[in-house]
Image (spheres, rainbow, N blue to C red):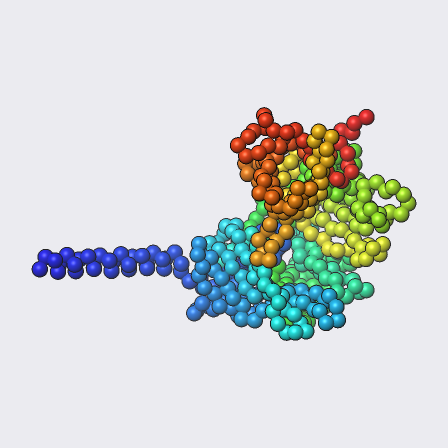
Length: 496
């Protein structure tokens, strides 16, 4: 009898434990219902709306609208598989070689209001043979936000001009394949009227209204009626906000979801003191602007000359030589400007600058320069020059020369996605090809199963002083060397 009672109690305990575990799992993994947004925070402003339905159904909207099936994955990840692949872009290599890159799914963290990794799943469709020839993924950082978590409008809009990201579109009549998003300047007047200043300096009359959490803009663009419905994602101090919006062409009925900054234009302009120093962007890329009017991209990459024009804009030009490529100083009279870059200060908060950035570039060598678009960048400014963020930044596609004891060795560092979409750090040297990584702030290379450690001891405009040693050793016993940059900017201050 006692054995039966103990057995019954044991089985009851197991049942209660299993029930509690199921309840805990269900509590942690409640099926989402309602509207959500995936807002990319990697610098691309990619935005998707997700409308979750019963039975693991979800409607995914970007510049398309398609049904999808979703399921749980480990670490509270959700995978949404699209019912039909959605074309992103098309590449025609020849008459019978056309490849269409299509979005097939999204995977993301189910936790809201925090930055987390997310993945876009894509396939390559061969148009002529009508078959999938490749699959790959693109990884990034995004925030998942419930629609009901979006904020009410608090900013005073009237009699102010705002730069609003991604609401405009750049096209060129003689280049029909080109299309790019762009910001626009919007001035709000009383009684629901205003003006939209477009990227090409044309203007459109605006009507606007606030309705609950929505700011609704209506205007004509190239004789096409446009409607934009903006909602606040987060406020940025007292200078602006980040938004998510539905952009609708009322004539074609085409809609797309966008996001980005909306910054109130302050009565400020760039000064030499605000330019000279280090500029860092969200993506980790940055420029160093030196007092001798030389700018260096990402510490080790292309050097160019900069100036402050009469409009208070920072201007750089990319100088191209037909044989040598990009040069800082032209060796003869055959060079031409292939790109022009402009930065206009919108607002400043401490050492954070919000700038409107646009550039004009050629579509073919020595062709006319055409506007490529206008964007809002968040810049972290530091008056000091340094090597901050070098571990994920300067080695994107960077040639350098290691110099030691009168010897020179050419290195090329690159960071490119593999077939699976993972970023691979590659290094090529006279000893062979291998990989590199960063551990405790030091550069590690692994070439032919031989590991070397490079500890940075000094940064200068023309190179990095390092000591090189093997695992288990230290700088005290290592070899002193210099990684020389190839941008031809020379040292700073310049040596006589």
